[in-house]
Length: 144
Image (cartoon, rainbow, N blue to C red; front, side):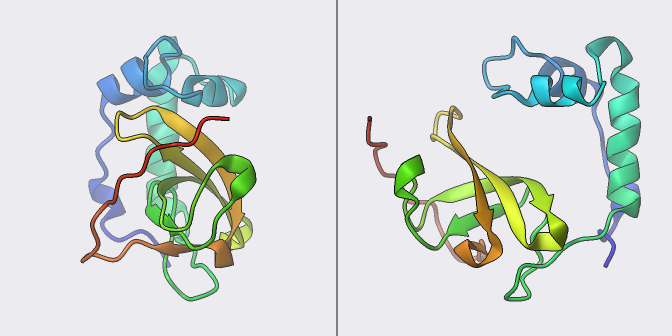
């Protein structure tokens, strides 16, 4: 299934140049290094904008094993604790990469201040889509 209304996707220069490709941005969390590894640079921000538009219009939306459509940038809920990462069931994260048609996801968990707490690879049965009637719940991170 294609992303609905993909032709209406907005890719702002500031978001790409000043955030995604800016390693010095305090909330970048390694995104600039990731995109640099793919050959994208601030000086040629238009190339990343073009790639993002192409992905929005041509990529398929994947589904997890329960049939919920989960795609990159979706918010998900962790179903089980992942003690090694300090993650607990109920933690809400953002999908930053979809592996093998939704069999697994790379998920970034952030503090409410926007700092990255963990980036974890999880299998589809370990997460679920966020429901529209849910609210975020806060808990303190345990320090190791």
